[in-house]
Structures are given as structure tokens and as C-alpha cells.
Length: 360
Image (tube, rainbow, N blue to C red; front, side, top):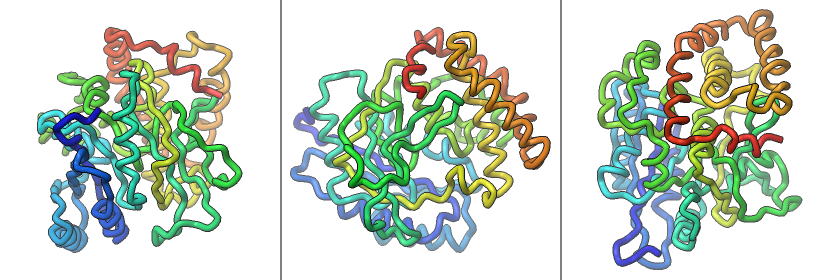
């Protein structure tokens, strides 16, 4: 139960030239209703080196909304920016972290519903809570009829991951509270215990990452390694889900906690995406495999992923998407780091066998 002290939730929003929708996100946070004083909300907007005009507008917006504003002179990436707030959770006596995109609008009871689930949970392994995200248009207006954007993430036998029930009509689904592999990084509530258990504290494994992103060298002592900073952007939530599963931590989908999201990056939009985004997607696919998959552990279940799907990806790189060649070079650069992290997980008793049950 919550006890006498309020349950303190830190909301972490990371921006990078993210556009005006963040104003709606903040409005939804300021409109959150709590039935009593047992929940206390703090909000941080962390800007990742946006253009000056946008950064100044955002700082003024945060001042009007009485929201803490922080900024970096350069782009630290999604993972490192949220890791700054993970450090605050542990060191400033917060109880949970809500990772939130600047294009998500929360229904007024969303956070309370999630936190109430924490209060009534009797399973210490459940430390991540996943809301129902519904699709909206570019102005954060809900679509009618309601369509699912994400009900947690799921994995497939060809080593891909997707948002559960994406594009399905809510009226056609039997949405219920249930365990899921993990949640999308667009909106995910994780407890302080989760942060402390998944983090690579004191890990000397950042050399390869910092050679790709020198800006990460500064301030690393005030970041807690929750999201893998090698996953500068994209697939970082999938990596976190797999790491948590290996460590015996569980995530629960809560359909009564609802929010609306503008989805900008999906597999079917790949042709229209920038070469940088596509290269990150390719690189992070292979990093996931180095970190968490071993074909000899489940040869029949991952044959499609290790042989067929990887072959298709490589053929596509060499024939159609040659701009993603750099992804392979970066995988090679980070290979030892990935293998070392895997060894560290095994030393902590993290079982690879735990993740296979989620593969369709």
C-alpha cells in the first residue's frame, strides 16, 4: 500500500525538435486527477539540443506550466536522456519513473490507475506497468472508432518485435489485464526497484558507445544505465524488455489506463523514413541478437530469425538500402561490448530461457 508518505512519480519527457504537441502532453499531465493525496507527480522536460527557437519556446512553455526544464547542448539520444531521470528517481527518493513521449495525451485518471495497480500488486516480480495507447491524428485527437496503437510489445520467431494489436479496433478486442513482455517507450511506468535491478551500475562498457557518440562522455556519472545507450534511438524498449525478462522482472498491461499517441515510425513507412533512422533500426536489430539471443539455445524457434530474416536484411542492405552499410560497421565496433554485457547478465543469474516463451 501507499503508506503515509505519498507515492512519488517522476515523469520524464525527452524532446528533440519535437514540435508543438508537447504542449498537449503537458496539459494532460497537469489535468491528472487523483482521488486522494497518496500520489505526488513531478515532471521534467529534457531537451536534447534542439534548435534555439524551439528550445526557447519550450523553456517558456515549461515555465508557464510550472514544469522543470533541463537541456543538453548536444543530442544525447532517447536512452541517455531518460537515464538522467532514472538517476534522479534513485537519488532523490522517487518511487517510480513514467517514461513519456512528447506526443502522448493521457486520460485524466491514467497515472492513478497505473499506480493503484502497484499498490495492490502482491507479486514482487511485477515492476513495469503498461497502459493502453490508442491511435490519434497529427493533432492528438483520438480516432473514431478507437484503434489500438500499442497494448504492450510482442516478439516473433523471426526475431522482430511489434506493438500488440496495433491498428485493431478496440471494439473487436477482449482487452484485459495480463502479463506482457514489455511496453513501448512512448509510455511506460517502471518502479524504482525495476530501475535498480536492470541497471548496469559501474559497468565499464561505454568505450564503443562513446566512440560513436562522444557527447555521452560528459555527465555519465549522473545517468543510470536503464536504457542501453548504444540504442541511441529505436528498439531501446525491446532491449529493456528482454533484459528485464531475463532478470525475472515482469510487465503487466493495464487496459483501464488509457492514452493517445501519434505514431510516426512503423515498419510499413520504412521507405519514407530517413537513412539515419533506417540504419539505426538495422544496427539495433543485430545488437539485440548479440545481447540476448543464442541460436543453439533454441535452434528451431529462431532459425527464421538467425538465418532467413537476417539474410533478407543483409541482401536488402547490399542491394537496395546501401545507406545502412554503416550499421554493420557499428555492430562490429560494438560486438565485444554486447557479448560482455551478456556475460554480466549471466553472472547475475539472468536466464536466456525466460525470454523464449514470448516468441510466436
